[in-house]
Length: 285
Figure 1 (cartoon, rainbow, N blue to C red):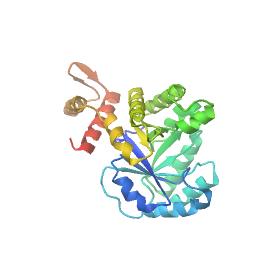
Figure 2: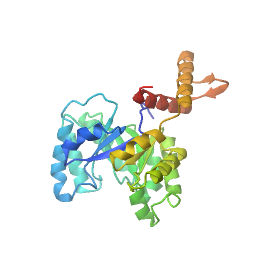
Figure 3: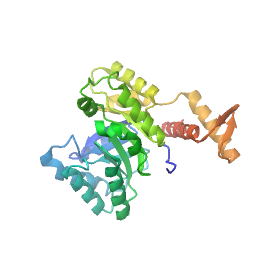
Figure 4: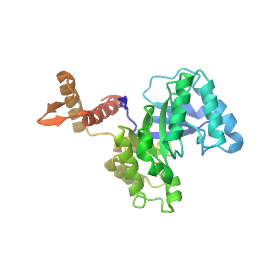
């Protein structure tokens, strides 16, 4: 696997492909990731128009503002997904990243990777694990393509497939399996949005639980959730200072491992240190 560039992924928000006027507002919301939506949030009759409008957004030069831009396509196993991919392959200005929903096996990721390579597109991939089949194959999916930067846990569809309540305890095993799969490939892992806008305290608790389990961030359904999510997933000043110290020691040593403050520091630890400093840089601290 290649070394991926660490970046903050504390929060993300969707913006509908049918509403290009909402894209700048989403970019200004404070979210680390803005995802233009072509999948569940778009009715079948509107898919073609949403695709056209969404791809037009990426024809314009994008600001270097630290916000990660993603386009969520439809499932590769559906006609709309194939039509999305064909349109992306045909454009000279593809989105910088694609979010793949309902991924069940590594094959669909590998196929999209190969098609993008054939088209000369450097587009990155984010995969959502939200089916029972995807959960079973999560480890193989995480490691099947060097284009993958992050895995997302889709709790709503997962709960429906598992016939369980969409709550923390019933989905604890599924969440843990996705976290472990992502960690095996050095990927970030992002949790499902908290749907109850009227329960900010509950959202904070859910975000803290996800953080403590290993998630790098969590989705939002409204901009008013983003500040709290960024706060929960932002490392403390002490952790930021330690990360910078460890990185400085490592880069000065110029070896594969280094001892900092009496502790052996190896590559997996360094990956997390770089992620922490990326968040600090995004905050300007």
